[in-house]
Image (cartoon, rainbow, N blue to C red; front, side, top):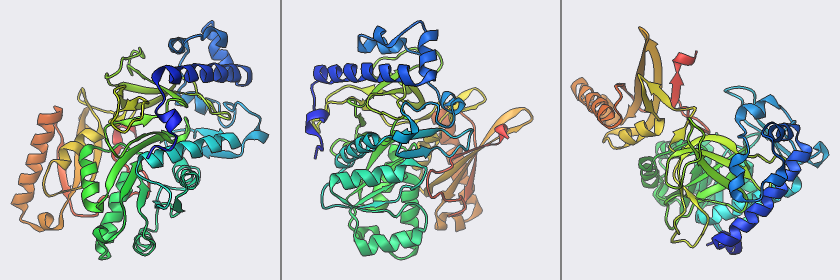
Length: 433
């Protein structure tokens, strides 16, 4: 089902006309009301009136997460505080939190975009959505919640944590759609199995998973364990929250970006030069309809590519391919670039390995050392030591052959790696300590 058929299937020429009009309005607003952007324009020798074509957007300087932190908490807001009805913020685990605001109209726009996203992911009126994204300052839970209500579905605001209770609710309430991080979805499956509850006996049809990179192999594992169709959703607080882009369940080949509200670009993360469709680089967004907290050419640090080809679902918006990692999460191990999702793909190709892993990076004798900790099944872990050693050597060999990096592989027993109630902690980089 397409929730907003007029805009989601709009011909390219009409879509670009809307984008240009909304872009010009947004630029005039931020120039008049946000000192940061006014200064950026003046330093570049520009004014908003200089932007007469969509191609002119590339002349505007980038905005970074550090810019948001430098203007903490509210100096990036484009409206007075008495017009702000909602405030969200990042966790701030890697620095000063980034704070975002919403007007009442912004909340309505977000709700509409999330209704679009949920519909693309298989949800509709009459469905019951088990929403296991976290509520609070994190945008995931409330974003899905408002979108579900706008769509006309029922929503269970269960949030993260209390996993055993969630399993009971899934069994008793009969939800048909699951929303969660992919790692927490697997944790739910693990706990359900321990409780003697089979997902085959539950009513789930679709799962909408995001907030962390995950591979196609992880998708296959989730679909097998949870007995549902899994689709990928994308969003980030700085741009809107969840609902910026989503896969359609018909194709599951790239995430439709809602281009009537956001302009996506791909740039080389090193040179910052624009890249054409199909080439992989860093994703950049400009928001077109956000009132309280518009962002102009915001560097997301997410690595992906854009695909303009038509989709079988009928939507005409450009698709972004699955995010493979973040430019600031990329590990450089003895000169080799490694993303956690690449390790994950190798692990998921290996029999007897569970979908729970962690990468630990240390520096020994001035050399970087990567240790891949991965859980194996109970039977494998209780097998003879020789069998475990052979499995470790096989994984080590596969990582070396496929990624060109040497790694130590450490097999651990089931549940040895700490489970997360939200985003999984995939990397522990002791070089930064």
